[in-house]
Length: 103
Image (cartoon, rainbow, N blue to C red):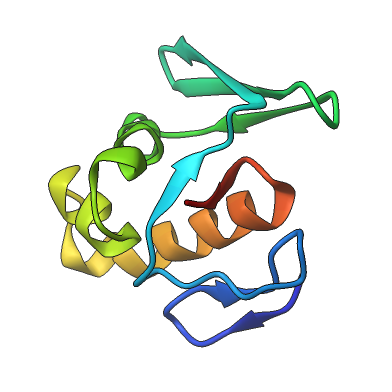
């Protein structure tokens, strides 16, 4: 995975680039199990288990489907401006692993 700028642009699983100005969704092959710290993420296609380590990140991932772009989902989840670059980086990683995908 290559990373570029604070906007969190990174290579995605299919070779495209993560674009936080575009619409995304949680992959239909992914199951999120709520936990006190955030959520367990299971990808049925890759059989990979991973974690979302904060409740706001879970809210962002769940909200992607309802917003026109990633930035709007982050804003709707109430993520503070100073924390947004870290969230974009995390979401770029989720896109690279196939947890979230363009819609």
